[in-house]
Length: 198
Ligand SMILES: Nc1nc2c(ncn2[C@@H]2O[C@H](COP(=O)(O)OP(=O)(O)O)[C@@H](O)[C@H]2O)c(=O)[nH]1
Ligand SMILES: [Mg+2]
Image (cartoon, rainbow, N blue to C red; front, side, top):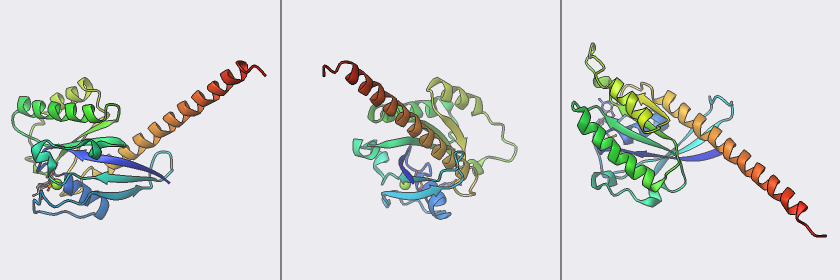
């Protein structure tokens, strides 16, 4: 089974650890223990579009995000990044924070798909007008992000759909890079033959 590293990033308190708990243990923790962190959890997604199960190794920060000191090692070999945030009242302020995170992500791992994840959607007032949805959709296009999800780790809303999309994306991306590699090596061997002097 294919195994992929996925990393969670975003502000402290956004709900990264609880997203990990929800997808791996179907659990939720009301306490905010920013310093306690497992390195990663594993989730096998069976219902992928390709019908091939995919194993996701999902990495959680251990509080380093409070100091904006997520290291290169954390991002190393990641196949996708989930940028998690919670809604704030001021869009310009939130946009700035998200852009800082994207800068950091793209500096460490320039080509991976990035999923923008708005957690805690259970906190919305029942009839609240989705003020930010349009701005966020534009943000996703402007920064060429793979997708935008609204989820609730607490109420288990959208979490499975998100990770299924992540699994499908990293799996198909892996197939493409394998094909490119096979194609490149087969054309190389042809060239080798044609230039062979014996
Ligand atoms: N209402 C609500 N609270 C959440 C949700 N996810 C996390 N929280 C709470 O937000 C706080 C921070 O969550 P945590 O997962 O530790 O955030 P992290 O710092 O990004 O890892 C905790 O008190 C959680 O119980 C959610 O979906 N809805
Ligand atoms: Mg945490």
